[in-house]
Length: 157
Image 1 (spheres, rainbow, N blue to C red):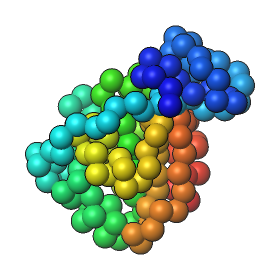
Image 2: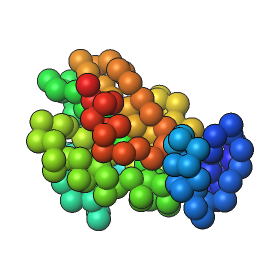
Image 3: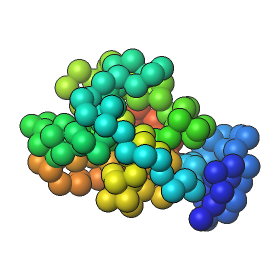
Image 4: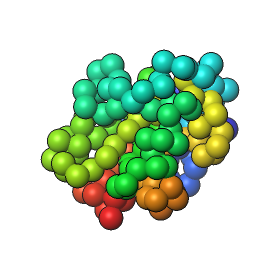
C-alpha cells in the first residue's frame, strides 16, 4: 500500500503528488491516491443524502442510506468514493460538478471513505478517487483516478 503522500501512476510506481496529473496525462493513464486510512467512525449524519461542503449539488451518501439512494435507484448512479485529504479527489470535484450540471439525467453521489468504513470495505476501495457506476443494484463499471468529463459520460453508458 502506498502512503497517503504518494500516488499511483502507470506501472504502480511511486510518484510525488506534485505534477501527478500532468505526468498521468502525458503517459495516457490516470492518477489516483492510494488510500492508507483505516477509516473513521461511521457517520449517522449521512442518513439523508445532502450536498457535501464545497461541492454544491452533489449529494453525499453514507453507510446508512447507500442501499436506498444507490442500489434501489431507478436510474444509473455514478458514485465517487473520495476523501477530503485526497488532492486528486479535490481536482476531480469541479469536473464532477460540471458534468452533473451539463448532464441533467445523471445521478451522481459522493461517499467519504473516512466517514463510511463499511462502504469502503464492502466495495474494496484501495485507491482514491474511485468511481463506480451502479445500475439496478449491480456494479456495472468502475474507474480509479482522475477522469475527464468525456470519460464520465462513457462510464455512465
